[in-house]
Image (cartoon, rainbow, N blue to C red):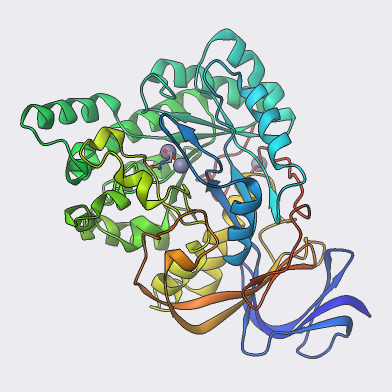
Length: 467
Ligand code: URP
Ligand code: ZN
Ligand code: ZN
Ligand code: ZN
């Protein structure tokens, strides 16, 4: 007799799909059995539904404050929205405020999150300086459970590090046994193009993609690949958008570098023509949306394993915040809301169209990133001993995205009006329902902090092993 049995669903793990029951005891998966073979005090009927491992979203901005605007969500909001999207673990960023150290930012974020989350959460550290104090703190940050440290090659005067500084951070993160995350775009190319367009009087949001061409992304990516080779630091390139990134990633694979890549649903489903619309500012994100060729190349990179994970890069700005400075592209807050729609958009565009198998979908939405962050096999699979983080997903649900009806902290979605096939229905976090039939039923103190660690994942890291 189990506490809960999820009965008679199609269970999908990173390796296979099968009809069966999942038995839960004390918050963990205690049995996986044949259909209708297990009994429990509570039975959740999954007939006709797919049972996925709870999704892990490792790129979520919560209460992000960059310059003039702050996103509209608290940890409770972001984790509630995540749960409605079937996501049972989010990993937001602890970006230091001006003058704050990475460790202080981490502690501040922990205080903000602890007791205020519907789903489990980790935290990425961030190095926005590379002075001796920062570098000295990084091993401690990694030991305290923020094993992934993000750096930015853009956002001058606030977040940006030079290549020399990034080399120092990579060295420190490698020595501490962590993982580096890099936002890779070339600041100098972007600043030059913005200035050139400004002289022509072209300053509004519609030039966004033109100011950040694919070459600004690949230039930065090549430099990162070389720095990874030099320092031996396992590194994840976040939000890869350019089709030509494939050349960099193929080269990295040939060189057996521990270089991983992430993309986001908006780069897989949307294109730059949206910047021609009269409300095009709503789609301003960095890197920008690109052309259909890039979009199609990203799908190939998912299929080839060059891109191993799809995360939301959720930024809960609302339409008014995006609109405020639409006449000056440099002042439109960057980023799109998406923590709630990630799984359905990827399922609809990937699995429902036949481009991705259900098992590949599981690897891209949970397993691979759980492995990068040392959370696997506790997270990222359906197996005995894993946390009972389960999503009951209706593969046949057809619905139209309406951002104003979502729980995520924005009044619009970049996917507004899109017809989607597939939708999470019920979400369990460590055996407890957090969303049932689409309704939030969980408690905002159920989520717990998950310390991350630098895992060894040689098959993801092109055969490279941690020393
Ligand atoms: O446009 C984006 N991606 N904004 C969020 C911050 C970042 O660069 O990840
Ligand atoms: Zn970024
Ligand atoms: Zn981001
Ligand atoms: Zn190894």
